[in-house]
Image (cartoon, rainbow, N blue to C red; front, side, top):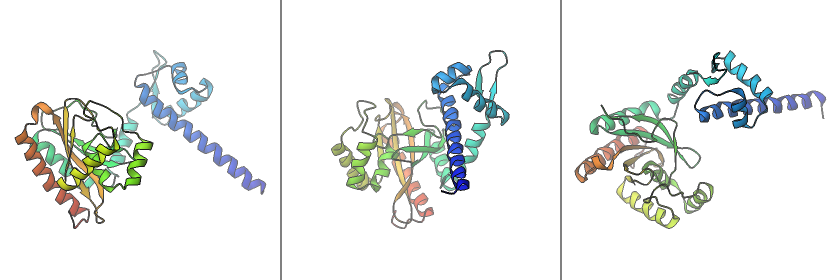
Length: 266
């Protein structure tokens, strides 16, 4: 093998490993959640302190991290949050569909979300709270949620074949989050059949106790579900009349949003 090419390959591998460690540290710091000392971070990440220190100093140089001189603890800066907000704007459908999320939230004074599928899970890419409301749920931008236990997730399963549903069960499992969670493939298939006919989906306290979600699909020109728009609220605020009103409103939004995505069959 050419020595120059071999050296380039070796350097490339080293650079990839360095990047991997850098990302591991960033993600690890978000999980620690509080300012932490070098030895505590190293223990949490199972990384030598000498190696970790080099990365932390680089993060400080680029303003991604700071160290409190009084405690010697390291913590992430808001630069990552700024990057996240910029990235949010680059998501497919983000700019055109966010208006519908806001409409739903403000019309019913409840929480509304926009989600897409990512690796057999649901990713929240936009959220909006109704005026004066603050539903304490896990629905926040960047949050990952299971497909089988959320309304938006079950909508995306309309795209799945029998084989893909089996792969979902194998890869992600059908974890039980509450007493209402669907935990068998047979029950999930029945739910998908109902959703296909109804044109919308429910999360009846399946992911979080006390919270109900109503969701509708956004389809593209191939009639495939590419996103889901949902309204969530405590079950105490969702009586039959309000639920039916939300369903009607969301189905209208589904039609409009899908047409924007090029769907002619919505």
